[in-house]
Image 1 (cartoon, rainbow, N blue to C red):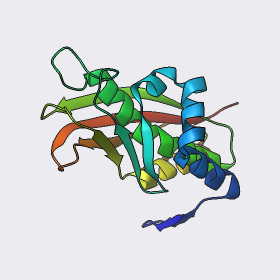
Image 2 (image 1 turned 120 degrees about the horizontal axis):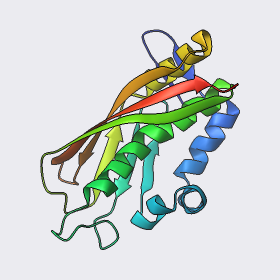
Image 3 (image 1 turned 180 degrees about the vertical axis):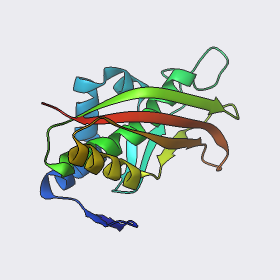
Image 4 (image 1 turned 120 degrees about the vertical axis):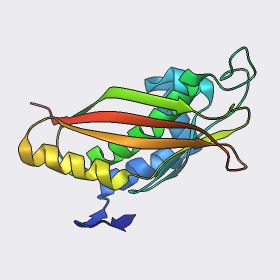
Length: 172
């Protein structure tokens, strides 16, 4: 997969492309979640699309993700939003061939409608993540970057909008 940004074309190396395919595999992704992120596994998160620009994560509506008011619990929505940005970050880290650390340092969320159906969180700012990692490698400093993820129901109704700030730094 590749994209053309203002600065350069991003082409995934073999290691990053392998991870992308693993994340898109229902079985391998769920195994990853079960081992590394069991709460996300329990809620039923799934990556529907992943390339250097975009990530779409689905969150089913059901007893595992709902609150007592018959809508999707805000924490489940935050988890899906973070996954849509974090999968792009993991892909970019695999692509950079450096020992990179990543950490969420801030989360802001706003909710505009009751989420009571399958909700898809979409992040379209992959180029910002790749650029932040390139900057962290070049400067050897922590580089924060704020990424947006928008949650919508199948009819296109927006239910939530999250701003997730990641910090990237070369590990010593």
